[in-house]
Image 1 (cartoon, helix red, strand yellow):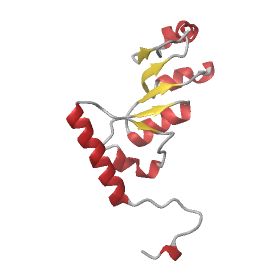
Image 2 (tube, one colour):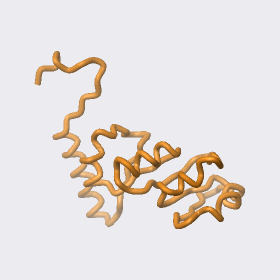
Image 3 (cartoon, one colour):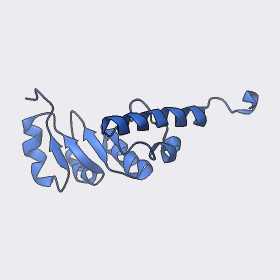
Image 4 (cartoon, rainbow, N blue to C red):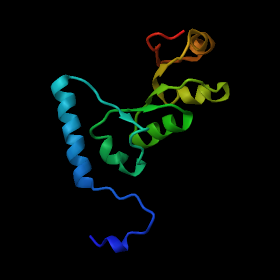
Length: 127
């Protein structure tokens, strides 16, 4: 590869190394009998999601845009947690959500009736 031909600035990904890491993650999932989901905060290179989604079955999201990204690029609904949900976005957010975590009982009471089919969770120690 001629590195001088890569435009700058640029994100460069070694697909072979990414695949090796994803295969290790897949092995851990199978051995432990669990599903590991992608954290967009740690890896949000959506151009690699067609490869990533073959190994990981979902992602976390903390906003409407991240949930939409998961739905459109990972081809699955997101696990959503946000300290604050915007009322004007909440119905659309639920369309991209499989699981939603509320930060407080007040949030739960405010949005519970709109939940449709999403799984509802509370973090330990929420007030």
